[in-house]
Figure 1 (cartoon, rainbow, N blue to C red):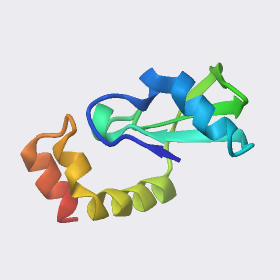
Figure 2 (tube, rainbow, N blue to C red):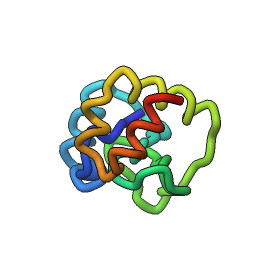
Figure 3 (cartoon, one colour):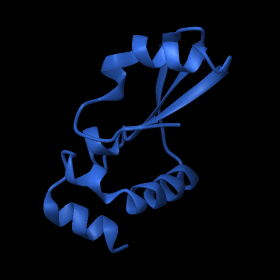
Figure 4 (spheres, one colour):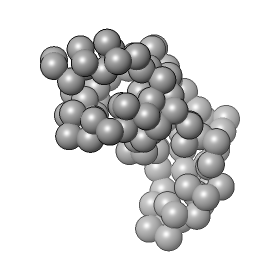
Amino acid sequence: MVSSINYESPLHDLPNLAEQIKSTHFHGEVVFDLLCVNGMSRNRFISMFFNSSFDRATKKALMSHELENAQSEFYRHNPNYLHSSVLHEEEISAFLNI
């Protein structure tokens, strides 16, 4: 899982991210939570296959209540990420008070 931590998309830095993941010898699907970039849109979660580099042809949007619940907990424990996002203060407040 790669979580956005501000309004800049982690998808813009795939080569650097690929180097970090490659060092762990991971191969498989990588899920990106783009809440801070895209807000609560249908393309909040994106997946892409990784095998020493990202295969952009496999990029697809995901919908998952389990992912949403787990990641919502992550952001509730890291509210500073939400304050550096595209979300409005009202959205952040509502999100944190769920």
